[in-house]
Image (cartoon, rainbow, N blue to C red):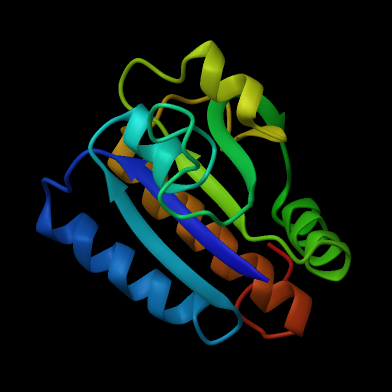
Length: 155
């Protein structure tokens, strides 16, 4: 299994980039992971094989994947439930799992129709760069839960 975390826009804060890099490194101890910045939603969908690249051609990546949109109205999981979701996915599906964090205006209907699931990090509104770090930390936490690592400790 491979995980891709894709976000729209350039990283403005060096601290966010540092945390992004750190959690991608940590997750990489458990699973293949990639962080990708996309210029806009169309680039996000094309980069991740969810939209045509133009005039009937397949997307640039040609790799099928399952899309998870991160939106405030999505399904909420506890850390343990999220770990179970990732563990079940890993056991049952060989396709990459793409977590997408949208821009300030959320996602279009086209992106929502391409998604297999929509998840939320909670009811509070988070800045998109901060949401990325929270998502990465939760992915890392999920794999530590699955592997019985003491990082989580049941909190």
